[in-house]
Image (tube, rainbow, N blue to C red):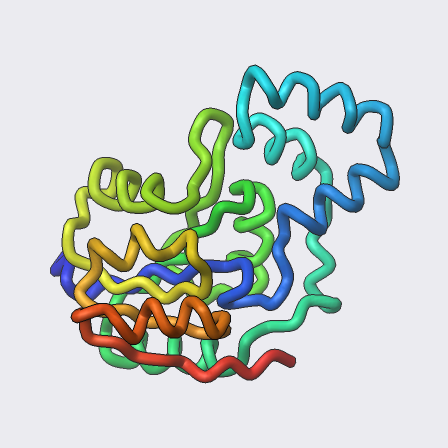
Amino acid sequence: MNDNRILFVDLDGTLIKEDLSNLAFIDFLKKKPILLFFYLFIFLFKGKSFLKEKISTGFEVPIKKLKFNQACLEYIKQVKNHHRVVYLISGSHQLLVDQIDQHLKIFFESFGTKKNFNMVGINKVKFINDELKISSFDYLGNSNQDLPIWEHTKRIIYTNVSNDLKKIIDMSELDKFEVKEKFN
């Protein structure tokens, strides 16, 4: 596989407007508030990936209520039409990411936070480089947490960014491409 032909797409705030971890957290809080406080205590020792797994287990993503970024979906289709491989990658737990992947059926594979690995920021780069053995890639994201990822990409591809982040992106010497957000 030609690794310079690969696009990684962020989920929360990029492909969808919502943050799945936040939705799962709110749902868990409503259904099991006492257990959540217990998990929050254990989180202090076991970390975010532990907490994300606990709140995501059994959570059914409300697919029909999500606001998908139609412009992002169109961009992914264009990229795939050029015979490029596209992966979904997210800080949300793998259980949640898989539900989106199974619904859309447009990604080669999907990756999310797992038991001992929080798939955010530089951890995404480590995973892409070390586990997938990919060193040259594009990344479509939307947040400040994506800045360390873009430092390792061929170009900055972004959507739905804040004004402050847009200023930082504009100062970068990398090539840039904006996918104008269009959430439905």
